[in-house]
Length: 408
Image (cartoon, rainbow, N blue to C red):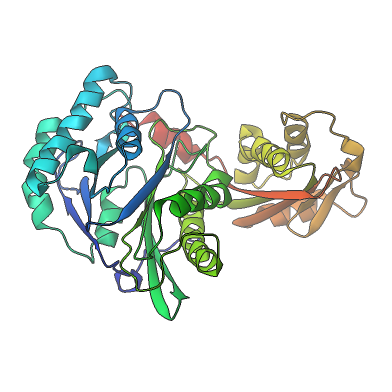
């Protein structure tokens, strides 16, 4: 069960003017489940993305990146589950392009106006025939209110769909923002998350939206980890249909700030939802590292803790073996850590002071805190003025079971 994460209410998910979505059962891996999604945008929309830095990047990532770099308006996103189309060589790239070509022909648009996305088992061939044969009913199913259906259709080992909306008032116009994501395992984004798609009717130019997606990514998806593994298929896309009546956002003004806040609200929820629904997760853990030399250093310390199997299993067992946290800090890839300066808090309890067990701390107190399903660690480095946060989960028996059985 996900940690304090509930099923989205379709009534609370806002449609976005200029965007319609369709889903269909293509039978890519399983029968009787929707596994193919189409997001169609009106002419004049702006689409930007960030992608995995895993050097073994999947074929659809390569194709989507190339098509985005071609410039011009992008009109459609085609998303499949069941096959990651990664580790498939030149054939995988050709297969991804074939699906784009087939959809473009049906929509009477150019091939490079279609962006492909895949998730599922690595080193499996994309079933092009099943996808192409499903395009007709997929298009027939297009509707502006299908965001939650799309969130369900892009799931793999997720136990719950992830979808949310926000809004902002810009020049007396309500600007809508809606996003969906999927991800549960192989989560250690080095750009974004497994798959995430955010749409808005805001009026913003491409240059500003590119800056915004980088800022939003660094403040949300790049701060999560479930298991320390960066996927081959990570993709995060923001789509702006430019249909709101406010002035075009061409600089970092108040309108930019308000739009970014609304998009960041959505991205933050979706990124945390991935952790809350982490494979086998029973606890949601926030790690705050304070007073580092710079934000990158703080991130390295936080990720060293968050990705330590020994730390994660201790949290699962509610075992206050908190020396594992000290060891993980010492293993962070930064130089000259002075452990005699470090204080560590478990929730509001000081358990390590200047590198030693705090006089006021006891295992009895620690165990009580470790039993909670929401835990906050605070590490005070006393090296500078920078801070950073990472969100992670524990590591349970079910994580091993889910991944041992993933292909069966």
